[in-house]
Image 1 (tube, rainbow, N blue to C red):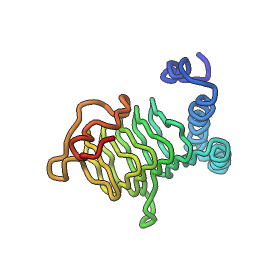
Image 2: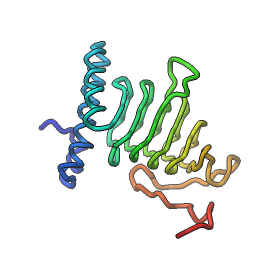
Image 3: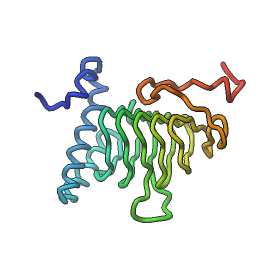
Image 4: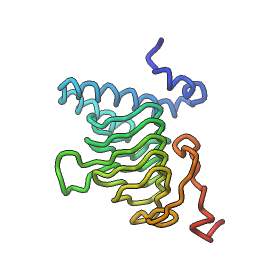
Length: 191
């Protein structure tokens, strides 16, 4: 059986040692910290989380809920708050923040649906919902809900196609890693 869950085994076959260190190991360490947190062993969970943050440059609160098939591409600089929930088959690039706004206590972090792609440097703040199969563009600042299978870009983030009739896509961006579909439909600046 081994220490690696079945869904990570294909990943292991095509991964370098440095990617293993930053990808699979922090994920396993976070899952141990999360288990400790749910068992009310919070000081130990926080100590482990602090060490994970030091070693892997990934700051994920032990109470955060992370689904299966998650991909943190490079992972460096990722911050995930205490009440955040990340669905299955989500791809998150480096320097992404899933944080609170500081305006409220309790449930104050984003909820990320299944199959979502979050681009590098994106910031998603508050108790908002990112729908299944949505795309968040690199460097975007998202402060409001994003409907399923739509793309949000910019600061502040806006839906591609507009709020009234946002463009929908069929693929699951968290699995396809498609960053560029619809680019010609919202911008004439193409290199």
